[in-house]
Image 1 (tube, rainbow, N blue to C red):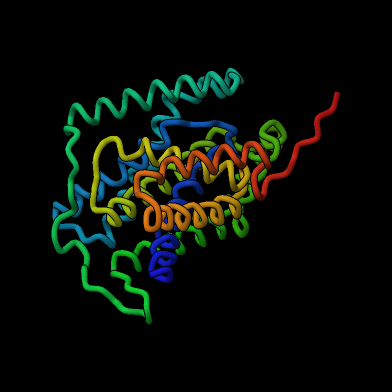
Image 2: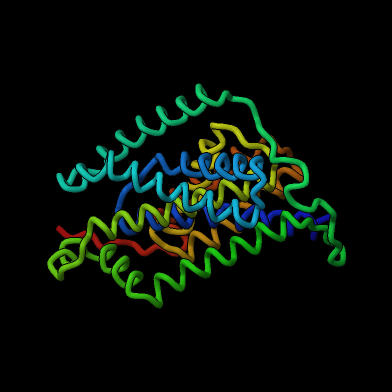
Length: 292
C-alpha cells in the first residue's frame, strides 16, 4: 500500500508544484501577492471542461485552457495592477485590490454558472489501469505527470536559456535598472502575468482531471496550498516550489491514507506555521541582511 500512496502523492505534488511555480514567478519578479491567481486556476479547469464538451481532445484543450487563462491574467493585471505599479504602491494596496477582485470574480462565476460540481465528459481520457509492479496508475495520472514535467522544463529553459528569460531575471533583480537599460518593463510584466496565469490554468486542468470535480470555488483551497508551497520552498525560489510541492502532495496523501482525509487542510496549515516559526525564509530561501 505504501508504494501506491507514495506514487499518488508524487502525482498530486507535481500539480501543486506546477500551481505554485506560477505563484512563485509572479511574486519573485513582480513582488506582488496577487490573490486573483486562484481564479486563473478555476478558469483553466472550466475552459478545459467547455472545450472537451465541445468535442476538443484533451491534448488540445489543455494548452488552449492554459493560454486562455494567461490572457485573462494579462487583462486583469492591466486593469487592476498597472496603475498601482506606476504609483509604486505598497504591498498592502496590491493585497487589498486583488482580494476584492478575486471575491468578485468567484461570486460572479458562481452566479453565472452555479455552484454545482461538474464532471469532464465520459471517455475524455482512457480510464484503464496500468500496473507498474506494485503500483497502479491510470492514463490520466501519467498525463498529469508528463504535462507537469514538460511545463516545468519549458519554464526553466525559458528563464535560463533565452533573452526573454534574461529580461525576466533582470526585472526581478532591479526593475529601475532594467528600465534605465531600455527594457520595456510594462511588456515584461505582462509576459510574467501571462506565464503565471497559464501555469495556474494548466494546474487547474490537471487537478480537474485528477479528481474529476470542477466548481467555481476550487481555486480557494488551492491558494492555501500555494502559500504553503511558496513559503516552505522559499519566496521566489523555483527549485524550492517544485520540491515543496512534491513533498506537500506526498504528505497529504499519506495523511488521508493513514489518518483522515479531513485533516489534509489542517496538515497544510500546520506545515505553514512550522516553517514560519523555524525557517521563515523557507527551505531554499536566503535570509536578507538588515542594515540600520
